[in-house]
Amino acid sequence: MRRTLRGACVLLSAVAPMIAIPSARAGDAIAPPQQEAASALVEIPSWTVRLPKDANVVYKGEVSFDSAGKGTGSMLYPAVSAVTMLAAVVTHALLVESSKSRQKDNMQEEADKVLIPYQSVLGDYKHQELMQRGLELTSTPGTKRLIQFSEQVGADWVVDSVPVFWITQDQSAIVLDNSISVHPPSAPSTAVSRYTVRVVSNARGETDLAGYWTAEGGQKLKEQSAGLFAQSLDIALGQSRGATSKSDEVFRTVRYRQGKAEKMERGRLIGAHCDRIVVKTLRGWFMSVPVVRNEADIGADDQCAHAPGS
Amino acid sequence: MRIVLATIAALLAGCASAPQPSVALGQDTLGAKSGRIGVAMTSVPKTDTQLLGAGCLLCMATASIANSSLTSHAHHLTAEDLPKLKNYVADLMRKKGTEVTLIEESINLDALPANSSKGQNIAKKDFSSLQAKYGVDKLLVINITALGFMRTYSAYIPTSDPKGFLEGTGYLVNLKTNTYEWYLPVTVSKASDGAWDEPPEFPGLTNAYFQALEIGKDSFTQPFKD
Image (tube, rainbow over all chains, first blue to last red; front, side):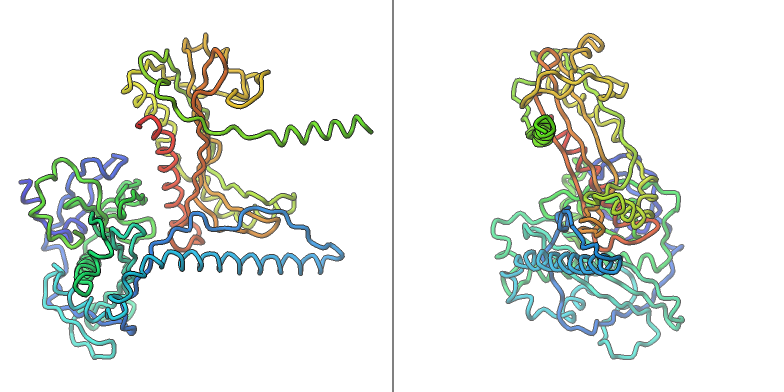
């Protein structure tokens, strides 16, 4: 029975109705959600991923804006008249806003320095390569193909995707934020479903992580990125196929691993498999993230080794 | 005139008193030989928005109006299991062999007299009366002072985006000497992941609030896990 549950694909776990779990920690034992009957899902006989306009895959350094802000401070405004005072306040506002914006840009620039060892790989990494490889790794049934942005689509379901990757500052994990639109065939534009899916890879333990990711033309980095991309498509398409989550689910704060750090997210747990959970966040985004391994899962390496986030 | 200047100098000196620095938990502070320790919390404050730096009355009013929908949302947030933080700390102390008395009622610090002694590692309040009341040798207090959102201002102008916020202090007072054997100020502020201005539910900031809540709880329990 345990093997059967472990063998179930991540997608089905993700889309299955949730059972209420009152536990406060994601690392606690998580009962596998009941799986929705396959017959309840809309069948997608064939689907097409359309390449984005921009050719290059976007990577950024993981950044935190927790310390952003210019602090408190007193300000004396000239109060010669109401007009001068108002002008002074407006000027102060413009200066502060510009300074805040510049500070965030600087923080992102600083965070992006983690990408320096990856430039030779990322400079030539195109969406065509990422998406072709990712498409092969998806588990959503149906025939699938990749087309150019300007190419005419046939009677397929069409998936538009804008992936943005982040490398954690400890370089042990890759994070994907994927904005996905799914267009049913011959449907009006209003029928488009939009999803944002975040997938966080399992953390790597190598000593030389930059060397690990960039070896052999960045094979590992590309493999991992494609796996994350595949998982995000499976989650979005699962939702488009009609998977729903109950509205009376319990919100809770789940803990997960992002690289070697512990992170938290408020949301509803909608799936669990292979040391990973799928959460629907307060914004309605989907997140597939690794959690601390439960004792019960030790020995499941064979089944989980090829899970897309591994 | 001299009296006025002396009074002002005394007031300024009072304002300039050095804040209590952190006191690490000693290796022998907990355990079978540490005596009986009471574990208590003050009342958990209402979730709210802190607007720091909006100094003048008009600035405060302006900032308050500008953030009214966020404040209204803050009032609906839950503190979840934060009132049980003392239970978690008590359990961790028991695991180290400490005799613990969990004090169910909230401690009202304002009702305690000020400590006549002043100085570093000396409690500001006189906790000695609680020794007999609860039958304990030491008292561990968790005092959460702010919970919700925080935004910094310079007069009328916000100098930061709002953030999820938790602020408080944990300390262990020796009731015989009124001195701190552990003192930990905790301030957690978490930015929204992406946009923050998403009324009326503010999902990004609400997430940041719950992150701050969890990190805050971890900060208070971590010293007892080491």
